[in-house]
Image 1 (cartoon, rainbow, N blue to C red):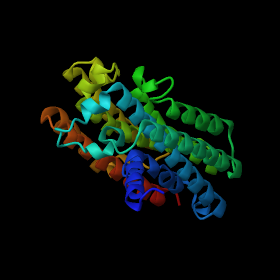
Image 2: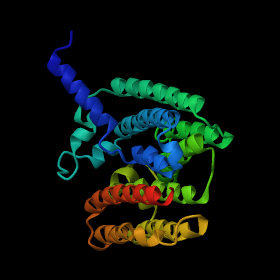
Image 3: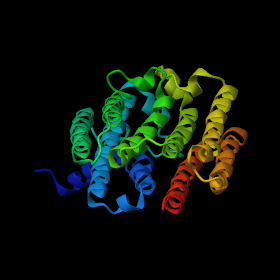
Image 4: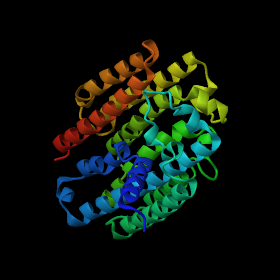
Length: 309
């Protein structure tokens, strides 16, 4: 029998592997709930669908990050990016690099969470009041791509990383919205697109910090493929696209004052870019990006509760 202290260490290592403290994608059901008509927000069936989808989403994401850690450990990029002398990054967040979990343990954990996540997403579809074909197909594609992000096909090693980080956020809003409302609307689509750009706009700062490690293993992120100036322009363009979507909202069903209400987010996004590419503090800019995304979701939820009455 394994000593209690070892069991406790294993549980802590698995929690760090799962990275549950980065919960930004998991805010999607909250946004979907706010987008629904008031009569649906307290409907027991709707609430159960959102909860089951969220639990499945967490497990699918955990599978993705566990396999990403396993691949990053095997190809050496995590060892390079999380070197022991890098005080600004927490080595314990990478249990394989820290030696607290074995490759076999990580792979087994990923298989278990992946299967359970798929089962829960299927269950959410079965009990949902609406099952438009596009939502079922989008959920299936999202699951397959999430598993293949750094494993199997290794999409993130083939130049699709940035697109996938955004598309993942788009799908975890659009799928539960389709399952609960049965609709596809312009204002909801704009909010889904804005939501998906949030995780991308702190992921690209991580990529900027990880250029050397990613280059060594042939991971073709935009930061690796372009110059410093080119990467800065790319991140700036994505930030500008997010602002453009917000300005578009009034033309697709949103209130005219929507861009004004989202102004704090726009200002902070500009500050994030300046912090990273003018002042050169990439990790601080990444951290700010996390906070900007969470503020964005909060603003969207509050605005939806005001508008959709």
